[in-house]
Length: 203
Figure (cartoon, rainbow, N blue to C red):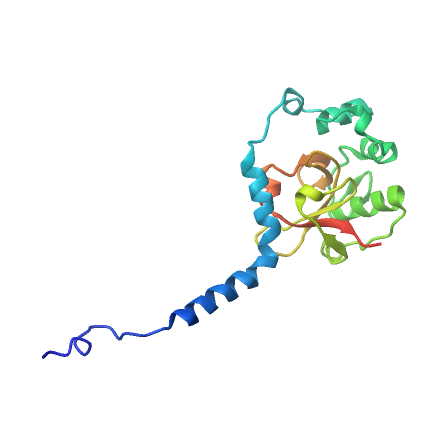
């Protein structure tokens, strides 16, 4: 009788089912803490398409009052309880981006976040976005509250290099490199796909 095993062109390796199951479990457990928030974000994003309402389709170059802010956020003006916060945003809206800048002639994302937190919440936070992120209690995107922080990693490095302040209705304010201080939508792929962490600052 010909020995069929010896005549195989490639060697045969025998791995028990229990070993395979253990390896699969380890990979799932190892990744779970990193992917839970992303899974939740993707579920929310896939449940409904982004609604392009007439309010969102109109570009407001610079809001001049709370009524115009409410239109950008697509919420009622009465929901803007923290008027100091929104008046602060109105004052800074459109300020150009400048790396290392810290005033209304030019400002970067972490400096804007620093000044807002100091003036509105009387909190002193680190100057660099990745350092701010290290002192944040994680939340799911659906649990974010006004004043929470959202962090991004652009460039596929995995390192936090941008920060913004969450407002309402998936909207956040930040110093964008292209448009300066502006309100943007987390559900836009440009931001949602690069979101790496979000949550509340630990006092």
